[in-house]
Length: 264
Image (cartoon, rainbow, N blue to C red; front, side, top):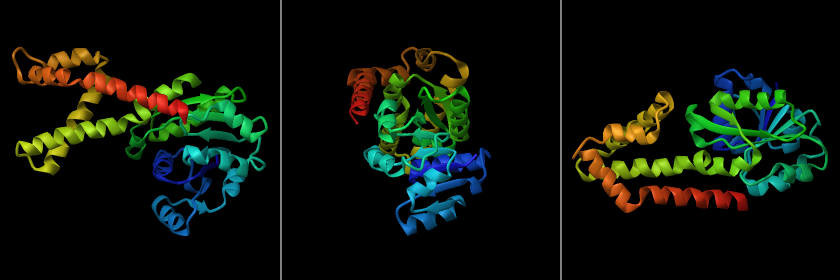
């Protein structure tokens, strides 16, 4: 299976690294495009794949073609490559807001198109992605994309109208979590802990808590209650978080994120 990437930024690099590490396909069967010679040299050294400046070359090469450019470049790129994309190629979008029907219209011919939404924890093999194929895609085509994305994390199939929600709950949410870790570390520093150590304690606490949700199957509220002993330190901290509106802030932030995703 030959996989092409138009664009080779952080997200594409994370995806390629996972694909190679998990032997989804060989480095020789991956071709990516970047604009500058310096970027091509850097990515070739980092990833051990072939690179080109020609998007059309990538489109003609690929069995699975991943559009890994910013959403505002999609129209330009699709118009550039549409006459060289084979009808057997699976075209994969990782952009928020760009609907299947919109992409089908730009390609001006029937194609297998799959919308996905990965996130940056793909960089460490812990990504969370969704997948949704158009009517031209068979279940085998969707499975092929899921297998690729499983190389750098977990994947679930969703309906297209859920993709904007995925943007809020997993696509953008690493930023919220990083802010939470940073805030906890800052507070620990204020109380005397060295900063590097504070980041380790805060980050490991978040990692362990997330694993408890996934591995125990318990409701997050139940797990929270397990930590909150009577008249203890944790319930006092929870009281302040409730007073300051933590839940409401997260809720409203995610609503704003989803709204923006639908407007892109």
